[in-house]
Length: 442
Image 1 (cartoon, helix red, strand yellow):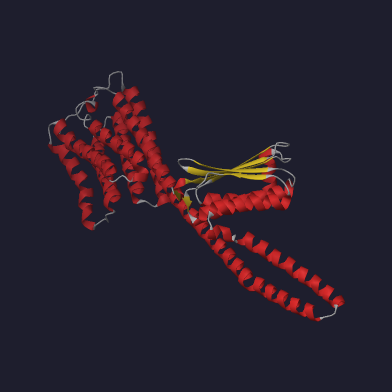
Image 2 (cartoon, one colour):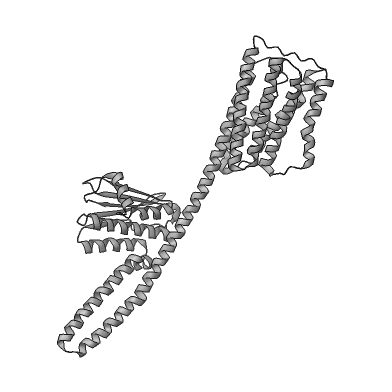
């Protein structure tokens, strides 16, 4: 049997304390991996938890050897080293290939026992006994790092790179064990370097989980945006259908009624003719009301002439009906926006003018459209009484007194942004930004 004497110059207490600290951090890392496995059910977390648990066992038997100087603990140290390498190796395989465990793999589980017996009983040289196990652990750690670097995904590239290089450097560091640390050459600093690597691995695992959560959140956000777009599109299609039905059926019915009443009026006595004339005027009012409703539901100008003429008509009609100054400042041409973006901008201006009509009927209004490199901005300003800032706006929205919620939802569904600025006596300003990925230059 080999005689292994480990010198601990002044150093038993220092080495024991460092190893104890390393054991605590390793246990915490194993527990962290276990918790992540329970939450995500990703198998590599379970195997990492087992690997760090076995690494904790490896440190524990070293602590027991330091405390008792019983060489039996060196045997278990060899076994734990082999098992740790196997667990890391299988975690890397599961991460890269999603392999399944086969029964004959248990042969590898038994091998550390056989080698540890040979190393501790039959070999006369400490290096020959320790180096193979350490090389295996180092190779497994290096392979884990290489797998993380090779199979990193775009959404987790930073975290995988951090973890990959951490495992690679740690694998290189393992190689100094039989030559330096086992002979007390730089105790307890070798433990502290291991602690740094353990902390780096923990940070990398947390970064990996955070990146995966961010990726899932982005996928969920994209799904919600697509759903919002679909709902807005379906809503507009329903409005278009109602507009066409009112225009093509109800308005034509009113027109036929008006024609029949006009014929009857020509054939009756004057007194009854006056009543029929009043009925004709009511029919005209009804037809105007229908035209206003159909225009609000789906303005024909938006379909026939495009966004810019529809916006100019909307502002001009508001100014004419309210008898106040309303101006639209816009470039001669606009980028070609998607149908959803055009509808969103039109509805935003429509809702903003409606709010002005309800809450500041005498206030002049200015709408401005600007085109930047990445976005189209619509700004609507009025010089009315305003209100008390963000809190008042939130209260109004919660009470359903303002239509900004629907406006925000439409714009957000396109990846845009809506900002409302207000102050008492200073009016209200609304900024609406539509990103240019929904547009192409004319």
